[in-house]
Image 1 (spheres, helix red, strand yellow):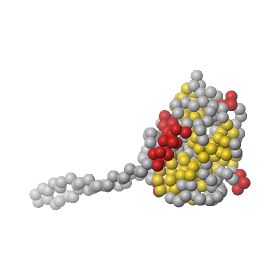
Image 2 (cartoon, helix red, strand yellow):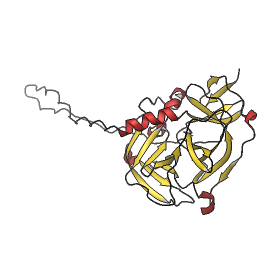
Image 3 (spheres, rainbow, N blue to C red):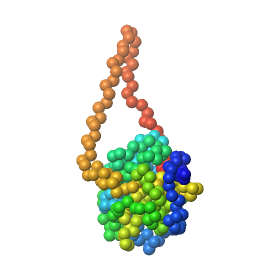
Image 4 (cartoon, one colour):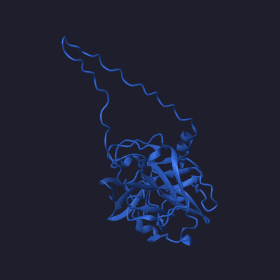
Length: 285
């Protein structure tokens, strides 16, 4: 029985080897205007000052990415929308468009329990709503397509820790057998590739059919994982269209009663304390 080792060596049985679907291409850096033409709607998502993911526009003001990119892996708390910046078409340090983020939303069924929670991959999708739409002729949002079938050829455009200033394209990798709401791909990914769009070609038009969620090892070879996206994305879009719940009013707790001893000075209670620390790190992948 074959197994996939997912980052922290969690096994998923019963998967076919990638070799039966043919050879994959290597990564091709997209470093010139001609090479990046058509891929400008893929961008790097900077999170604070020290980490990033990859995402892609599916509407002028909506970026599709992985839900685990919304969380600090150390504190396991959610980042705030102001922590995110989307750099569309970033190449050699320059972006076609730079936008801040006003709202973030993970799939309603996604629960972040740390990078070892491979079961969450089936819902590992999120939307970032930009503060202003990207309304440029060269930056066309992508359509989303149906779930791919085993053996289908797909493409992935991603940034990663060792290639953070320009995207790379893997023009030929393949879909492996799905497991529990997840697809396995023979595509090459690394830290920073989380949320990268996985495309299937509909004629000459690329359509997003999944996003990168995790890196894994199958029979000693690197593979990647992503959600079977069609149904979860529809659920996420429906949740996004619903009015957000109003924030609960911030009511400070009442201070405890002050105990006063005779002939003793009053000691007022202290409320609050130093803020908890923590910093962002590269997410997996």
